Length: 316
Image (cartoon, rainbow, N blue to C red; front, top):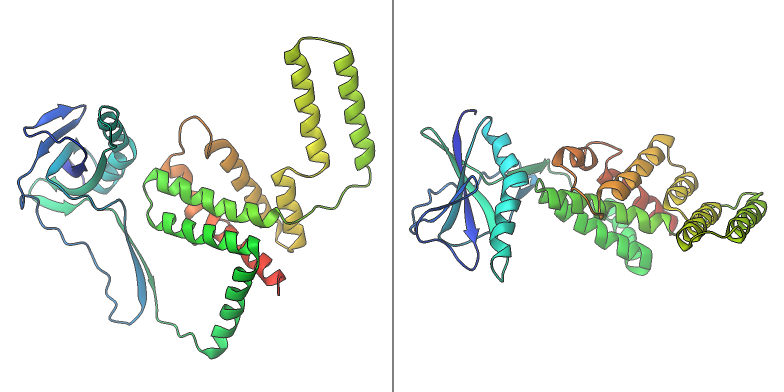
């Protein structure tokens, strides 16, 4: 559905205008109780006795405050653009002028005479499958290992939290947090693998120390000396194989993972270092979609499950 439409969001915060006001492209106003049209959320048909996840994105916000914004183009894409680009700006502008933060949640959109929901929803369906006594035995063994091993216990909680955040996408902050938590699962697992030391490690350490000593003896500013020390430290860490990417490769080899899985885990590590948990612009949804594709064997959830499964099975 394309063309001009107005997307309506419910607003919750310390102060709501009693008469319409404009803030940027938004109009803020109060709607009388019962004015919002009733748009029931879509529900899956479970007549086949299967199971499903119905994830509705965003909090449930109650109140009479609303913000609306005019959008162009495909309505679903426009709603996502509003969520990703416009809503954070309005919510922050409101929050910075009040002691408590504001919440904005999409509710509905009007396009011509059509009324559609703006509540972003995702469904995941499974056909019914039985878990019999034979199938339950390895699940029970897996549970006991997760309880008994501290690393597995922590990784299991991170994995479950990542799944929950993943279901709450496509808000960029939820998607980014989901990817980060999936990676933390991998980080815990590879942290227990001690890579084999290379035969020339001691000779390489001695060369690094000699080079650092020579640089420091030449004098120079404190900044130059500090740079030399940091460079030597990084090189010694590489030799000691403490850097995470080296541990990923060592763990992948120890668990017999295919080369593509190891390469993609290293790529995920680079994405984490460059785009997650650091200053700068947050990653866009388009960047995160690749890492959250549950159907891909090289996505963040698939790789996290792979490493955790290999580790827990090794405890048996």
